[in-house]
Image 1 (cartoon, rainbow, N blue to C red):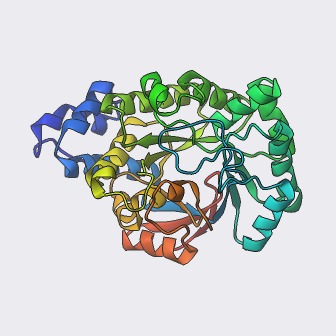
Image 2 (cartoon, rainbow, N blue to C red):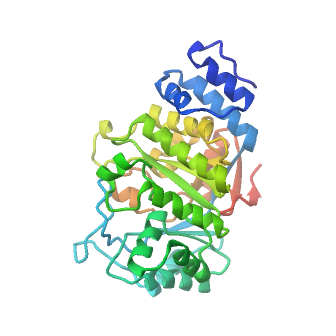
Length: 366
């Protein structure tokens, strides 16, 4: 069904653009954020998503692995990091990572999602060996490891170029990069919230180089703190421009900021309106991204189910044990089963599709 502008004249130009398949501008995005007409925005995002993906919503059976929480960076939003020797600090050896996986592994897990701290007390070889040992024992499992910020950090501690760092990791078994470390691609934001991590240009350049080496990668946006709507939209536009250049991104994942305490009041969490609007606007702005992911870990299962009508075509995965968002105050479960994910998708009157990392279909649950 094509959406008309009769319901809200303020969005008439945007409705016409979406119906004509025209790219939205920064000003269009600001108008969408300023609008109170959430339902029209949802209908537009749903229309665009269904043109790209039909009724299908994707998920994966995956495992999160966080080999270390020791980190030299001090991001304002992080509850996961620890200093060396601090209570709760840990660094698993490659062999301990393997043992951790063996205890939790099932035959249906198709992806290891590996992120951790910027641990300066171990050499670059530690990060290479962690991938290599997993690939050696689980050659058929995709390794999605190390954010662009981590890759930049590895270049710093190793003295290698970003390209050589990526080549070493690819030789060890790296298959794709996760989308983390992007936070908000604005230097004003990064100076206040993540001053010790990769800059906007550095984050984008890591993915540009990864794409040139044949990797398909992911992109995130951590919203809900000090950033402006304009900064969120410029974040999307910068990703869109790189996607125009390389075509290497598979999915965009808006991540709702967590308040660093499970006991935090609701005013310190993002609102349902903001979560749903951001997912929908992401779908409308990122016209060259195949998928928008709804991250149930941060917004909860009920909003995730609703988000499938706001432009989301992916609801992530089983995880087994998520630590980073929960260390920052996430209230959700640390994992879901395949049957629970299927239930969520069917409950939204969508078709569940189990996928691998690269959106190849494993099974359709009609």
